[in-house]
Image 1 (tube, helix red, strand yellow):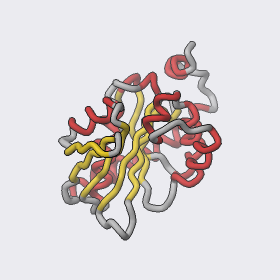
Image 2 (cartoon, rainbow, N blue to C red):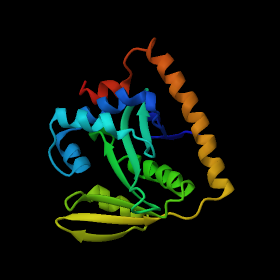
Image 3 (cartoon, rainbow, N blue to C red):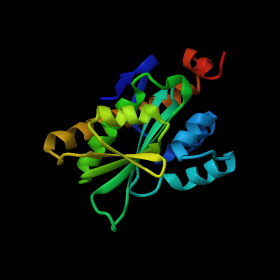
Image 4 (cartoon, one colour):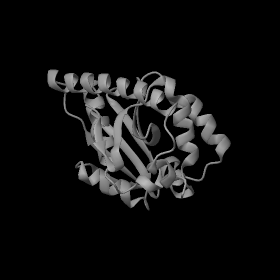
Length: 201
């Protein structure tokens, strides 16, 4: 099932056809959130260039959506044949939805996806000043190490089981249905409370 969290938002996979939602989400990130996501300040042009290549084969994205608008993303990227069974995860959450459990819900769903793909080790990198990410890593029992002014968290993912595979299958089915309904609803629905909140109204 889709996971309902803060302000009625849902956690589900971000599909390849939702690339525009992903680009818009990254462009809405405030300066601090951009710095935490990318490890430094990034201009709009560089964010757009990154978004063009982010949804590549093997990458699994889970999103937090409110009223059909993408407000947070966790990206799971395998490190390739040179490091089999190893992946990295990166988070971006828009400021009004930070500290509401969104990161925890995204990481939980991401670890399930990693488990079902045979990924044994998940790296979470962040700046040394990113206390939220460090707290999130500790919540999931990651071992933290400090290196070159940053923090690297590693979370070992357990092996896949028939139940874990079924959980992801069911979540994907509901997530796809939700994506279709969101697209239809936004054609006829005026801006909701959460959209006005994000726009500072």
